[in-house]
Image 1 (cartoon, rainbow, N blue to C red):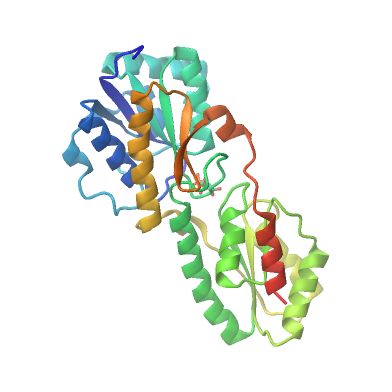
Image 2 (tube, protein in one colour):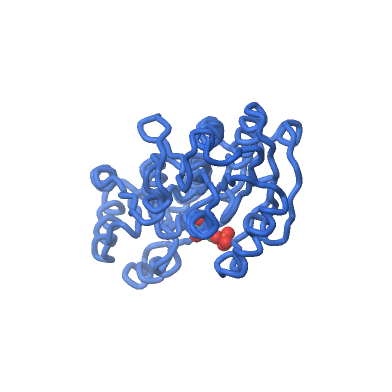
Length: 325
Ligand code: F6P
């Protein structure tokens, strides 16, 4: 090994995601198993800058696998985007005797990690923790499955009231610039349409879908809208003007999508990835994200995970259209 791996720093950064705690547990215990000490950094890169760090033992991660959120807390840290901020973070790392970092988060987290690793020659391994599932090189991110199931549960409930009142609902879900949550929740709930950034849906197309749905036996319709763009409210306003007779409602699911106990899938994913992060460090890997492709663990350079666009499955868009007749 070209450097001594005696101590790792561990942090979560960016939006929290269910399963982050399962990942924290797995990284901590796999490190301790390999005689590597763990320093837990609070509130992401901010904690690194402020030196908000405590040593972790195996009991620090007891009873957290089932908890949503992150016990390490998280933040979106502007200061880490500056050279001065990163310099201060590096000084903390030296002072604390941290030899390598494991960071759990999304593209913002890995963008910061990549620059930091380059500037100060620090080995960093990333775990994909985001409900958006928007990282290239992994079939799924930690938290995505749980958030998808949370959305499905919410939409099923909205469907009950939509049907009772013969209403048309626009339901807005998270996903920043990615339509994975919107498209797959639409498939899972039998929604009439999904409006996602990866596929342009003209108002005319939407109008046709809704019109044909209402004209036939359906008396309620659900359209899932990915956040961003004009959003569910904007679309609803336009449809209201076109179809004054429709009883239109909007529901924005918001941050409830980020909370809750992680699904079994996310717990297992996070656990496997956490152990793989320590294996990767022992194998002298650096600046990579742990991914999962066809159920197998893979290593993805940060540069690719961040820069490449993760493609949405076009066939699923067709399936949704076929079934909304
Ligand atoms: O990246 C995760 C995510 O939940 C996105 O889906 C959403 O756009 C964003 O975070 C919301 O961020 P915040 O919690 O800072 O408002």
